[in-house]
Length: 116
Image (cartoon, rainbow, N blue to C red; front, side, top):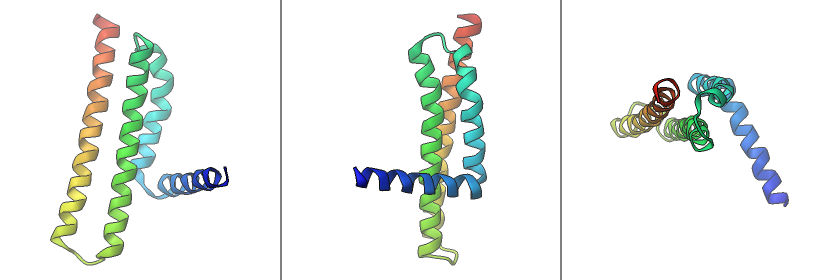
């Protein structure tokens, strides 16, 4: 139980840092804060509600992992490196696809709600 408590405290510490210093994480948490209440009106079923909110959480998860990779990359190689640029670009691509997935899920749910 102590290990779980310490892991939870580490989680809060990481979230606090990301919310304080990372604009992308801040923006995605705003999207989640707005999305959760809106999802109650948009989602045609509980499965859609889970998909809507899950897609926003997947986006935040991806952004947090991308941020972690970027911070580690900067620590390992503070100077410009082509290899590190590739690593950071791959993380950025992952965030892009998570964003595209969330957008597609929200568009599909809105379509079903309005025209379905």
